[in-house]
Length: 355
View 1: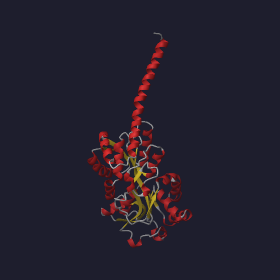
View 2: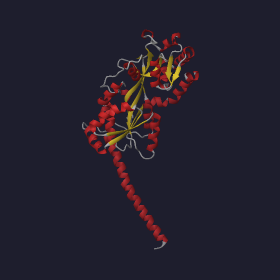
View 3: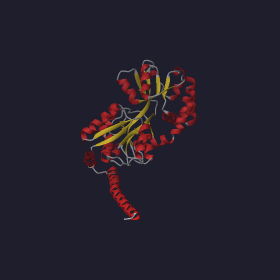
View 4: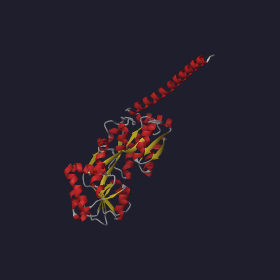
């Protein structure tokens, strides 16, 4: 056999091998995709049963989350006990989760479920790495908690309120409007968290751009406004008396501190601003049925009740909210992402430039 004949035989063998490989690979991928799409939109009364049976064969799922680990464990333990599915967890800040999911989507998908704030989930949806889901449980959510594209759904809220040290500030002296903050008695007593550009943009928008911008210029110039990094730290500083009145804290954190006996209480200059955090299922999730089962669980009454008990305002209309009776303005994840650069520049100009 000469070299040319050998080369031809080699090419035929290689071609056949590639055909067999592609034949074996593509059906598997297509089957996975069909399973995900079919069950993601399945509306039958036996949806939970079907997902559970298939998920138990998968055995586990991998969750990426920015939520504190102690809260994640409180949520996952009932799920694991009820369904027999192990939830593996990788915890990080939202930006790290975003980058990791995007990097994996270009190579070998690993994550099944992503839990983060709506801005990061919206960014992932625009990269087409999240699965569009139509589940019966979505009908129980606040309308604002579910984007039209259905690629994620919000399961909890970060409601931004005001907090004060009860030893430093009398309840009867609390401001009822933002304009009340211009009173000279608040000079040197006010603080804002460094990442709350979305809150600032929302308040300015409600006042009207010109009037709102001038308000914050006057507030900073006349009464000063210290900037602190971290919402948890802010509550601690209020409790310590270092910050008599904080303009931006998360309601659940202030309420937790109050219940523990710290000299902290909170109130809201309405409307209080709410930023959603939510859950999405990776389109190429290695454990699609377990991921969808977990998605339904987190939006269902059991997990929503746990979130409310922790202190988070839930998004389910079936569970009473810790901020019931307060007028709330829900910020849309898509709008926040679209206006991110502008709101960050606005915060830098009005607040950070004064430091």
